[in-house]
Amino acid sequence: MNDTLHSHEAPIEHPGYGTFIGVWLLLLLLTGCLVGLSHVSQTYAVWGLMTLTPLKAGLVFYYFMHLKYEGPVFKIVILVTLGTLLIFFALLFSDVAFR
Image (cartoon, rainbow, N blue to C red):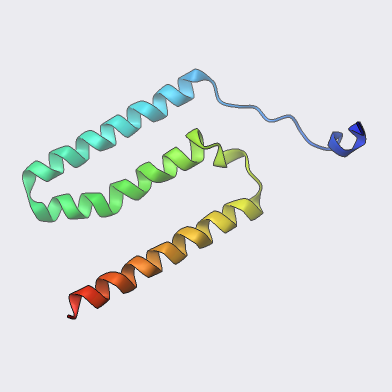
């Protein structure tokens, strides 16, 4: 096997268990916030879902799915894909709203 292909790559430092536990605790805290907001009012619950859920998904993508260690092209592809999905959801809901 040719080792010269991998000679220019820097070693990747993966986070320790403490980082994963911290992110997990943050996800639990954000989930608790969503549950709390759902008991306050339906309006707060919807706004909480619209703001906190993408934040939670970003944490999962970034840390647990190791997006943090991917190249910039792959990150751009993910953002474009999620942006396209968001546009489709917006078009779907705008169509349902005006029926």
